Length: 441
Image: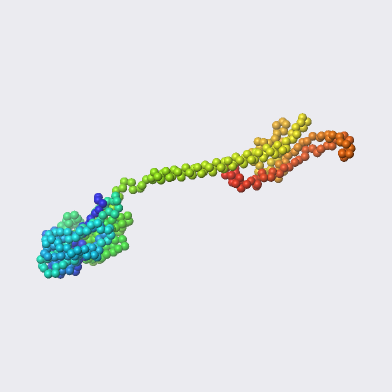
């Protein structure tokens, strides 16, 4: 695993563009355009001849061109030159320089690094103004370079063999180790409409197979984008049928390859995916956040405690106020004392008076409570037993009754006192709220 990866796209990939054409499909003609040749078997002399060794695309044509498109941070273009040949390089439409390579040998035709991670296009234009037959330029392969855009991210590549792919249609199985030392099995079809679909997640994908003179066109749909490629070639060789970099590693992707006509041969699929090296991707809460939470909790507890204390104090005040009123009324109506007179104080409670009053009910001489008389009006009612008293003699001019006769006073009058301000209906709104909050039984 590494924080960057690279893809090798060989010269015979149908994704590479050659002008005026990539293959004469007959006897090689270097002044006409590009021709496939091999380090061991030279150039193909008849269609379908199997190439051996390293493959190249070769031309001597003045004005011939080559281009490659990719997503990444850099590219190396490898090849070789002979004779007095030069070429121009263009990166993303801008001419960088005119290159005069060494007169002979394999070399880097172009190299770029530290590019912005986006789509790029590299173009090469050949100059051979004298049309010298000794002047040749050959494209070997392009090396696509992709760096990680995030820290602590590495890439790994997984190979999915053709035997594990879900082919649909009339595909055949082929085992041919002569095409590639890395892959010897293929699924092939010549039936239009046969396809294979593969779902994956990753940053890049590469499809390998082979092409020959009987190969035709095929379409590749990656998610919502579709391209149609031409697989025809004069020589039979293993190649990169399709590649794509710069995919969103977090989203699932769907690849579908459909045969349009001719032969289609698929050997394997490579998936390159990014993964994080962070041992704890989910950050723990900071100590600052913990302290802040503790302060908030303490403040909230203090507010709630103050509120409860306020309500409790209000309830206690209300109880004490009730008790004070009752004791004040009892002091007002205590009967006179004496040996010949009983003490009677009957307090009749109207509806809704608290049970708190029960503990202050007056008792008779024997300690037995007198039965209460309820007048149903919410007022206090009590009976006073008063003695008959003799009035002292007054002068005749001042009295309106006779001599020393005694006047009998009415006995046991009933007195009612309205309990103004004490009924439940008269309690202030805040007292009612406090009673309902903590004092209701």
